[in-house]
Image (tube, rainbow, N blue to C red):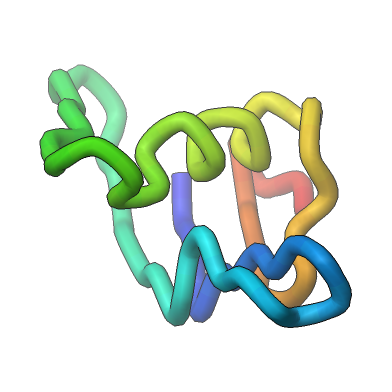
Length: 65
């Protein structure tokens, strides 16, 4: 899985939940998102699963964007 420059804005850009997130995850590895409340963990997972559309950036899973 590859994530490049992922961004999610709410309320016409008034609130940025995820800003410029880039990650590379490899097969057969365990991946964990850690952070304080309001860090954007749930928003990131929601974008990875397709529940939310990113404002900008690229999400690639198994070669599919």
